[in-house]
Length: 307
Image 1 (tube, rainbow, N blue to C red):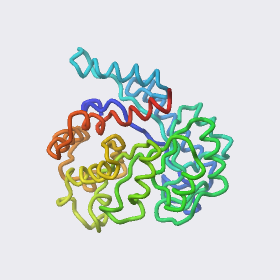
Image 2: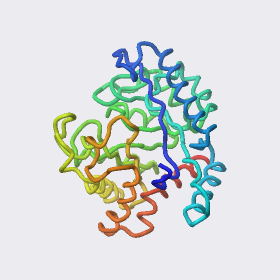
Image 3: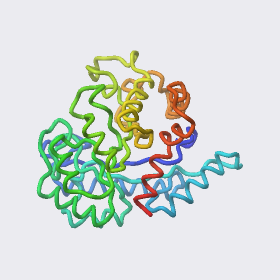
């Protein structure tokens, strides 16, 4: 990440407890999910102690971190600064009770996504039609009090609209693509994307090939016909829908859950994210537009939420 000039990223805690256990990700009890998520948080803290990352939790830290990276990128001598990390929770199942939201915030978590795959304790997620649960609605209330960002990614359609109706705080879709281009419940349709834009949110596009090519099947379809241009198609769709480039960024979803076999064929390392600059330029996007998509839109949202 540092060699690729990635200055800042979201880093997730992921430990579900949906009642359908899956090794290493979905645990039989909320207490186990709680323990695993705290272990993941401790791992990020250990990386920070060793100087590899810097956990960012407020606007002062954010501005100081980005200023240091700009100085280094402009030619300051020495090694690059640590990667800035904003901690999110993907599936709120580790939160034992809604009233505990503040404890996780105090621990450095700034973004909650209520669900992942399946029907969790707080909401229905991908491949589920369940809505927000009573616990989920109460959690949204606590999040609003604590100024915690709501990540709508992975929510079922029903849960998505219920969450927006209940929650008046800041919203994002950290890693989500367009259903109009790849029909699947995991993607958001144009009404949902427009609703996020209407709330001054940002949609981070994902690089998972099954979210880029209709009918792509894990373990069966190869990635030869999927390139980073397909990701730009989703970026462009959001920009055209919004009438602006200010509501889209890079979400990636490159968290180690898959490798090159499930990524665009022209993505070899994380450094290849820099190819988006030329690809967007070729589509007619201005330098200001490209800066916004590559980093500026996320920074603007964070500064607005944390001011």
